[in-house]
Amino acid sequence: MDKNHQMWADLGMDLKTHDLLCEALPGAYGDVFLTQENRPECMDYFEMVAADIHGIRAAELVEAQKQGRKVIGTFCVFVPDEAVVAADAIVTGLCGGSQFWVPEGEKYLPANTCPLIKASMGARFGKTCPYFRIADMLVGETTCDGKIKAYEILSEDIDVHVMDLPHQKRPQDFIAWENEIKLFMEKMEDFTGNKITLEKLNESIKLINAKRRALARLYDCRKNKVVPISGTDTLLIMQIAFFDDPARLTAQVNRLCDELEKRIADGVSVAKEGAPRILITGTPLAVPNWKLHNIIESSGGIVVCEENCTGTRYFSHEVKEDNATMDEAVKALSDRYLGNINCACFTPNPGRIDDILRLAKEYDVDGIIDCNLKFCNLYATENYFVERAIKEAGIPILTLETDYTDSDAEQLRTRVGAFLEMLGN
Ligand code: BJ8
Image (cartoon, rainbow, N blue to C red; front, side):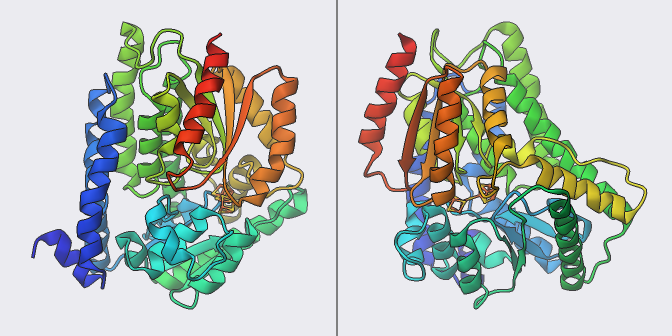
């Protein structure tokens, strides 16, 4: 039995699933990524991680567990990675982005639940994703109704800590979120047996800020007229950022940015002359959901920015560094997370509209595609404000709703194609 099969067997997982995924994933990956022309050479690292997505990093996590470290699974960008890292544990993002896991998830959840939640549940209960089996504990958050009930079901199977996220941003909400962060840190200390000191917390803030800076640098490269990297490749990097080692990821993104900045100086673009520049807004695109990017970019458009949690919401704004007291550090975390992430779970949520209009300008976009997952009531409802503001700003907008199946791919291709053609004219 090879190493990968052995690891899956040790995790109590089905080996037939392993072989099925090993056959299906490289095919899907190849169709989307290897058909792209003129990819940056420094995508080699991300290609390697993606090609063995269920092997290399998963094996590293198992190895770390053998050394006594805990692995903490998360589902939302509101969970502060800094608290996990400061307790010497490892964070891994767990949102499911494939239809492969949905049927299993539907055994536990109503069919009219968003596919991200169904896929995540299916991956855990179906024992078909190593990351879900490796995680020692899950951290949830009270963002949407679907998730908060799903965490209850998951907690019958594994330890789940739920952070109570306020849905407004008043002064008292910041204090409430500070208290939630403190509770979470206590939970991390109990669970890992490691004390979170001010020194460790300040160090972890610097580590995660460095990752944010590298990702911001990557996005800055896309603001240029010369677009040195496709949206599809950038999305893959963002998806990998959720589960890779943060220091290594930072180094690899910076290495890629050196190449991208040189490409810009040399005028090397991946986009065809006159390709409409697109900003995508909406719900996250969890790995391996490359559907929309692939459709846009294989139809002649170029995605230059994503206003979502696998995009700008993940890395924008840094946490204040070198805090003098624990209270100051916790406040810095609360300010960055609650103050700057504009998820549709907030009411009201004018910050998200400001973000979208600002990003449209900064990335010089020709059009915006607001794309939300089916049955995500929050984002579907917020489209009322989003669409109105974008139209008032005179920017063309296309609103789409989709899931993880391929059944609507042709219909999406037709609508996206017509939108791009209109922008081209
Ligand atoms: S901060 S977007 S990661 S909650 S798509 S599961 S909202 S029904 S993923 Fe999200 Fe945090 Fe907000 Fe970002 Fe529910 Fe909607 Fe599904 Fe969603």
